[in-house]
Amino acid sequence: MLERFHYTEKNSVRIPADDMRAAVEDIFRKMGMPDEGAVQSADLLIYADLRGIETHGTSDRVRSYVEGFSRGGPNPTPNWKIVREAAAVATVDGDGGLGIQIGPQMMELAIEKAKVAGIGAVAVTNCGHFGAAAYHAQMALEHDQIGIAMTIGGTGVLPTGGAEKLIGLNPLGIAAPTNEEPPFVFDAAMSSVAGGKIRLAKLLGVEAGPGWLAEPDGTPIMEPTMVPDEYAILPLGGDRESGSHKGYSLGIMIEILSGVLSGNGAGFMRRNSSSHHFIAYDIEKFTDVTGFKTDMDALLKRLKESKPAPGNDRVMYAGLGEHEEELDRRANGVPYHESTLEYINSICGELGLPYHFG
Image (cartoon, rainbow, N blue to C red; front, top):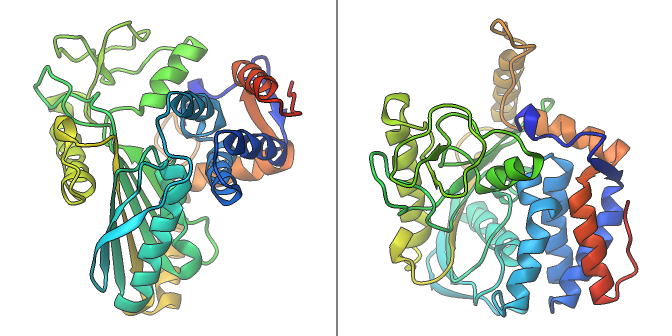
């Protein structure tokens, strides 16, 4: 995450992850989730907290989920079912449950299919927000598999050259295992910026970057700016000259794999809130696992040891920074913004839960 989005010691308090985990689990139980669902949902949020993904952890998501349950939105006790299936694939109706609750089960289904067929792919419809895509993708690593997870939701992104919000932010997560190096774990929206980062920019009072947002008429804003009251989000790349047609097309690809393929439809045509797609590749069905991991180590080690350009301390790869952040936060606690702690304390008080932080 960009440095300006990090919490500071002045506006945050470090809390042990397991202390926050207990509170979040009990909040989800109060929302009607069974124990297993509450534990799973909290685990996904604490994963994001530990890895510095503030936009998909406790800080950004608990309030949204609680408000959704209060409006009668997500189904806290979903009875998902497979509606189509073949050896390597399945389509699942999520029964209106949250993706953070049942998404990991969908990834497990893809993993099990991959163990038999070499590849497993699961399309899911009628299922809500699934949190950090990396969490689901990373589940494949312990099975010596490559994991991919993607999702659609919202319609806040403009087509390249367009003035109407027609597609979602559409994040994609990919994880590949290693032996010695921290694994490759990529997670990014196909928009220029995640929606959570815009909310975080407002919270911290920092500028949005050039090429992130557009004026209401679709004109790209190509200089740093405070987040305006009215805006649209640009595709990855910002404007056409910087390659936004690539991010735009990747966003459409995810609309197709997650939305159209699951029967939900894409963008403005969606029949329910969100859809997801999970893929697992069983490495031993393609190549020698030991050789694969050795090659991965060599690739990632060479990248991180390569010469940095002027103005850069070192070269990174996807997952390395998050791995290092997790080591620090497990040892020293997770920094939570004071406004997050105020909300958690408030909702715990309303629900009669014995937690108070800060």
